[in-house]
Amino acid sequence: MTALCVIFAVIYEFLGHGVYSWRIRLLFLIPLVMFVFFVFLKWRSRKSDRWEAFLPAITTFRLLAASEIARNAFIGIVTVYGTASSKTIILYVLSAVLLFVTAVLTVYGGVKKAV
Image (cartoon, rainbow, N blue to C red; front, side, top):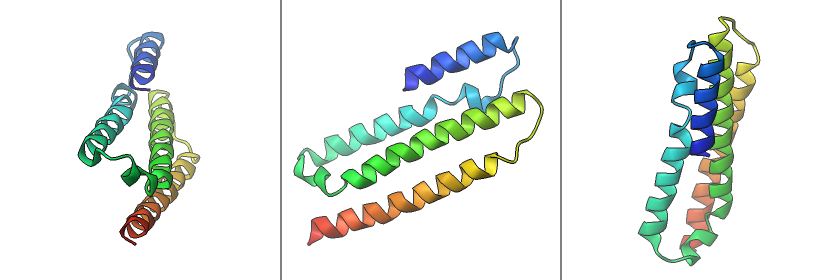
């Protein structure tokens, strides 16, 4: 995903005749940070049975990352064109809902693992 975001940013900047948005240029950071975070967690736990309780939270976290990528790409494209869109509020709400669901599922997974 990181490579796809880099390729998208390079092609978009090339086709945009040098006009770019910092959101599009830094789009690759979201999947890269997510990858490093999961590698760290996997290294930390070292046991697969610890992951079972957190699988719904991990899936929701990945959806959150995908929605953040889409939101930043959309806002970056709209910014490059010099316009504004009322549809960005939908992406903000989607990100907030996914963040809330991720937090709830993480707490639920922690309680389930503890019991």
